Length: 112
Length: 111
Image (cartoon, rainbow over all chains, first blue to last red; front, side, top):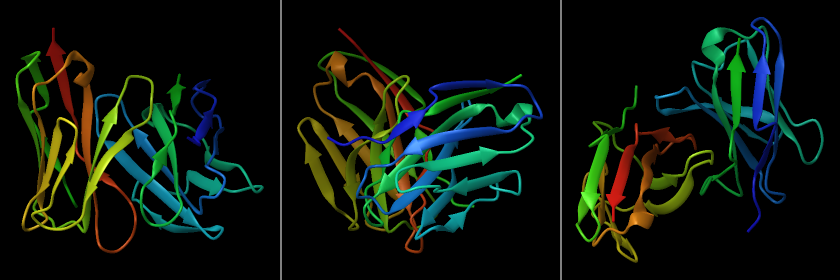
C-alpha cells in the first residue's frame, strides 16, 4: 500500500533556529495536513492544504509556521525561530478527498 | 473548543477478556474515526463511523457511533496480546476536514 513518508525521522535543533520538516504525500492525493503531538498530549491539528493554499489552520499555526508544496511531490512545514515548546512529534497526512487521511510515521523534533 | 474525551486512559487485561473504550464529546461530529498507533509510527485508521447508531465490526473489534453522533465506543472481544497498543478516536465536524483527536487509550493485553 502506498505510504506517506516523512524526513528526517528525528531532528535536533538549537532554539531560535529554523527547521523544515519534509513530507512526501501519496502521489494521487490532493489534500495535505500537518498535525503535532507534544509528548504525553493529544494529537493536534495544525493546518490543511488544498489546491496550493491553506484551507484551514488552527490557533497553533501562527506566523512562526508556514507550509509549502515546492514541487509536485513534497509538502513541507517550516518553523521559524524555534522555541523549546515546539518540541513534539510532527505528523504529515494526505487524503484523496475529504475522507480517509493517511499518516506518515512522523518527525520527532527536539529543540535544545 | 471541540473536545473528545477518551476513557479509560489505560487498560490492562488478561488475554481472552473483553474490553470497551469510550470516546465522548459535547459536540456533534459528522463522522468519527478510530485509529491504532504503534510506538514510532503514525496513527493507522481502523474504521470510520458516519451514521448515528451505526455499528461496524472488524473481526473481534466492534465500533459504535452514538445516536446523537457525540460519542462512540470500541469493544474488543476475547482480546489477544496482539491487540496491545494505543487506540485513538478522532472526529470530523461537518464543515472542514480537520481531525480532532481524543487523548488515547493505552491497552495492554497480558498473555
